[in-house]
Image (cartoon, rainbow, N blue to C red; front, side):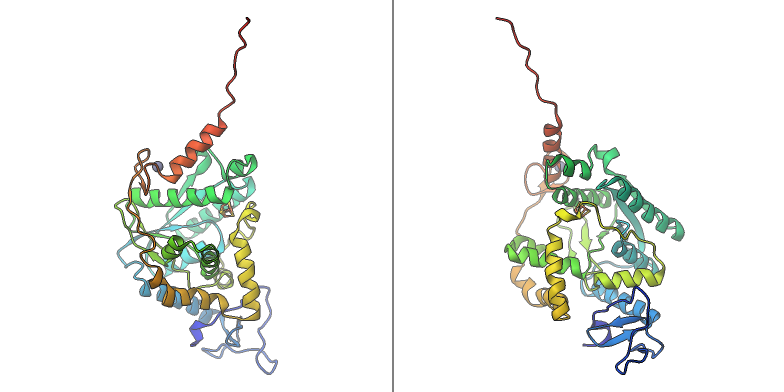
Length: 336
Ligand code: SF4
Ligand code: ZN
């Protein structure tokens, strides 16, 4: 394992990492005082070498999976959180042609306003282009409303909405690639969930780069899949990126959290577990699942977006929400 292959435990709360003899640790690469502890390799990095480490992981992901080229126009999905903003920052630093895309999902009033604000301030400070879609204004429903009325599982509607609207924006905007900020922890947790239920068609699709298989389906990539959640937090802090620290108010209903907790417990006992699980799948098992998802796409008869059936899941969900929102039919009593 080389110095760039190790997991990093960021020293977010301050304090100097300690070396073997109890004295201040030195950066493994340049021997300057270390700022970020690298637990798994019993090493540490200074701030600059840590940023270099993270960027190397992202470059490796982009190259290994031929995610995009210099000339490509990238639509980067940003939530206002550390992962997506750190990724946008890195891609801009690397010189890629990026546009940010934020959806106001309304999972909570304050949370929505703050998330949007983080994205707008980030873009403004860098003179970057940001496109914002507002679910309430554009689609007439909010994820919070769905959660409150118990009409559908909020995270499932939220996920479906994000997938649909991000692809639509990328496709209509003529972007070459849709970029998301899923990190190593997200991907390992998703893989665990899919493996526990043996959802082979989902497992087959869990690749860092998904090619376009339809004229209206934009290529999707996850350049942060080699970078852990702690690493993106440390990266954002060192780079001075302001991000929303609070979790989504509806996160309690997210099943992925349970899988993350389970993996975190394993990681504490056996550092490197998440990486071994995910990278091992990509290296050894992914080819075995290839072809488990033989779908033929056609256009939705309502919205024209790519789907496997006659009507896409998004149009069906919207129809269902509208139907349940209708007031009960009133019968007029007719006197005998
Ligand atoms: Fe959407 Fe659920 Fe994530 Fe909140 S926790 S943003 S509702 S998927
Ligand atoms: Zn549709």
